[in-house]
Image 1: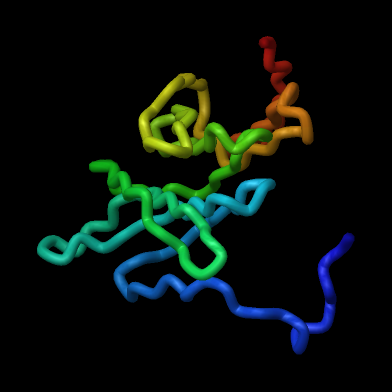
Image 2: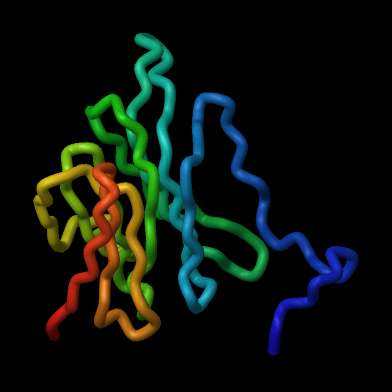
Length: 147
């Protein structure tokens, strides 16, 4: 069953997240609709520096409940995020040429991969056996995930 294309038939379930010190660069909703993760940058109130961050929310029938936020000391925003199929992990590349796999229940980093170049985008196929990554040099790499 597809989505209704008529906005008059849509219901607003969640409050809109607003904070004028936050720049949201990307977000992802899990396939089952239970989680939302956003990435971007936030202004440091005392210094004015921008720090990368990600925030994870559990989505209920009526609310978006924040699980937690992680801030990076790096002064670059986080630019992309994707859930793995199955919702257990989200993948976040950062500006240190590192991909982090984050547990979507606890925000713990479960795996990291250091890469040669800054990753700009990531995508999984539907069953999670392939991970495609692009980088700032224009290279697109597809990885086969074992196990």
